[in-house]
Length: 172
Image (cartoon, rainbow, N blue to C red; front, side, top):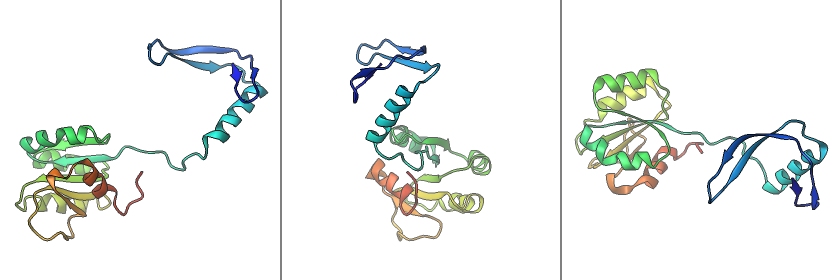
């Protein structure tokens, strides 16, 4: 192995544990059997140049999306591209099971202009008080409601939903 800073070769004994033969980015995964001092110095130099390590690793948010089949299909592309761990529910039994058995970061109601989301948000607030409660859809009422952290217009896109989910929180 070549140390680019010192311009010297480092002799290492390693076992190949993974191999990618991709034409665009061929690579090897190596497990070094007995790393020596030169190797440790190389790793330390690379770490210094890479900058500070993040204090907290990113984590996937676990989100329950509630709505009828039609609303879920319409929102599927949005949630698939989010990178979140998404659970879907469309009836009272599946909602109750998810709220009672899974620790959630948020409950999102895919709702119409009616108040059908109220019982869902009351259940979510009781069962998981730390989960964000978001209503996504057409909303004609006041923007402040103790049951809901945020209302998001249906056509606002993923950025607005991410903002609603992470606003005033320390989530990365």
